[in-house]
Image 1: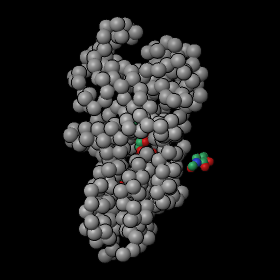
Image 2 (image 1 turned 90 degrees about the horizontal axis):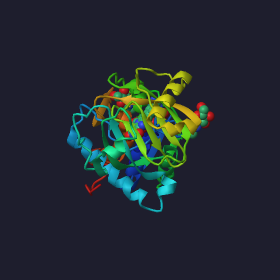
Image 3 (image 1 turned 30 degrees about the horizontal axis):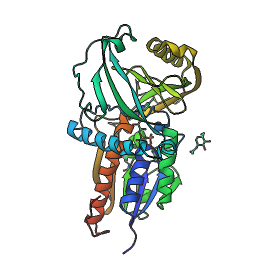
Image 4 (image 1 turned 45 degrees about the horizontal axis):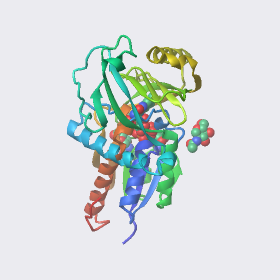
Length: 341
Ligand SMILES: Cc1cc2nc3c(=O)[nH]c(=O)nc-3n(C[C@H](O)[C@H](O)[C@H](O)COP(=O)(O)OP(=O)(O)OC[C@H]3O[C@@H](n4cnc5c(N)ncnc54)[C@H](O)[C@@H]3O)c2cc1C
Ligand SMILES: *[C@@H]1O[C@H](CO)[C@@H](O)[C@H](O)[C@H]1NC(C)=O
Ligand SMILES: *[C@@H]1O[C@H](CO)[C@@H](O)[C@H](O)[C@H]1NC(C)=O
């Protein structure tokens, strides 16, 4: 039997993690990533990469919880291994603070992170104007290291990588047996999905090595995430804005907001300003579609729309997408066994 060929469109966080999972779980297939951009030029390269779920209103909570748990547990093992520094994964503790108590004191993911508890008055004293807070330990991916590490592992498993823009998905017909669509915001043009839209986010990378805890305003507007080599300050959420250039006035505002949460930042040095477009959709699209044109079939597995929370769920969605690819290959009789993924 011929080796089934799988093409992944998109080499960002979602495409790379899906490609790696496929190459590990289906060694009898050839897996190729086709992407217009790779790290350091993807959305994930801008992100703080902190594992704090962002809720998708039209994805069931149970499903979101499973994806988050799979991702957290997988990355926790890496963080506790000698690979941690090359993979760029580390534990991070800190505080999520509120001016008024939130509706949910225990969010759906509170039992999945480590040591979740409400903050004491002594801890809250550091944040004038804030009356409630949650303290917990989570994980952070330093995206530049993490994306490079995944790409290397994928290539070590025989995975192939092409830098190219796919203009029409039918151009891949006949060359690949299954297409996996991880094109993020690119799917708006490539697959005519008008339900996906960009939410622009701007962040600053600063040098502030004395900071060891994250601080996040519970409304998500302002955050400080210390990382391995720099601290990420954010952020902004501008819907339908496609511009990828940082705005100086916005940077100044972000810096001031972060300094009001953590005055010691006044003494930090800005290293870089960055902008990314979150591929926002009311639900992550993770499903099979058999596209048909002129009597030809093109099987596609969609995996996109991770919005502002891709890092928090990407291992879970990569596993689900890999399972769907495998089911499709069995249905199409490319592979026979239904061995466990
Ligand atoms: C400022 C900011 C902060 C964030 N912070 C966090 C955080 O702390 N925690 C968290 O969980 N998430 C965070 N996120 C969200 C996270 O970064 C995204 O969910 C994730 O990066 C999306 O990954 P993706 O692979 O779907 O998209 P992308 O990285 O955009 O990848 C899509 C890829 O597809 C390629 N592509 C598109 N169309 C085509 C085509 N036609 N042909 C070929 N290639 C194509 C692109 O070139 C690109 O490589 C943040 C995002 C931003 C912007
Ligand atoms: C990232 O973008 C820059 C500027 O457009 C380009 O020179 C570089 O080759 C890109 N890198 C990758 C890996 O795509
Ligand atoms: C990926 O999904 C988006 C959303 O439906 C769609 O617009 C795009 O055409 C899809 N790409 C492929 C190759 O199927």
